[in-house]
Image 1: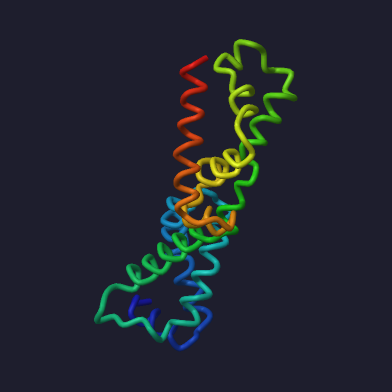
Image 2: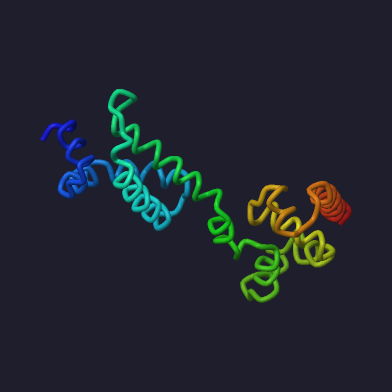
Amino acid sequence: MQLETLISRFQQKDEKAFEELYNMYSDSMHGVIYNIVRDHDIAEEVMQDVFIKIWHRASSYDASKGRFFTWILNISRNAAIDKTRSKAFKNSGKNLDAQFFVDILETSESLNDKTDAIGIKNFVGKLAKKCIEVIELLYFKGYTQKEASETLNMPIGTIKTRNRNCIKELRQMVLGS
């Protein structure tokens, strides 16, 4: 079947046309989405959402403005970017916080003195709670300074100053040891 006919049938809500387009483009869409979100399950979820979105917005496709493939890839890319900006996506890395690493260092029997040669347990343990909060959000969870400001309910200037001072404190601890 000609692509133009297939797209026309898709725009008329023909489920068979939807299935054929899905089979034609799902691998490419998954690849584009995966390159942004870096997780196969999330990429699959975003791809399914994109197909639902293009099904509902099929009438908005205009062949005179570009190819159908380009249209759905742009929607896929934008959806993947939106996903990475969502709070749920950022919070999905909750195990990547400072306490997680301290707990591993304190409880793991596989770690010995050589493994902890830089003394990370001591450095993290010496930081004030206010430093750990800011560093955890900015460096371990990937928050922007604005998002950290909102999460901790602090002015952005305070976040910036605290970040700078806490990193300086860590640097001095490492270099001074």
